[in-house]
Length: 109
Image (cartoon, rainbow, N blue to C red; front, top):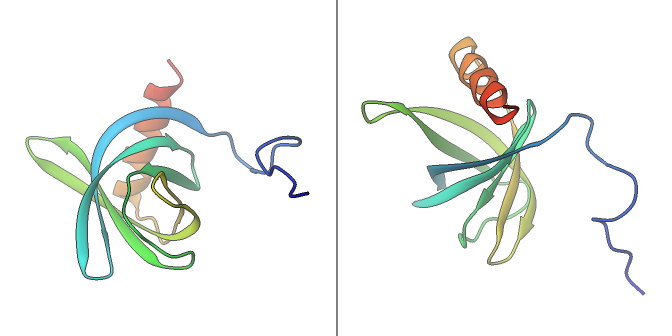
């Protein structure tokens, strides 16, 4: 019998917040649309049917205003076929951290 990883003790070290933000994401040789389903200080879950592999480096592009977007880079840590993937952010700069904090503040309201 396979243990259901979704039940039991919370595995994450930081709280995730539910969001619904239309984004674009880019993997090896492709760019696709998706939706952020949740986000935390350390990563996010992208809803979409794109095919990625655990360990793959991807970029997500989050809209901010007037058609501008901020890019976040991360590593795929959990791919669920036809549902989406979890990614852990890597190398956040100050502008990315500021946007991330604004998103988290809005999600808590």
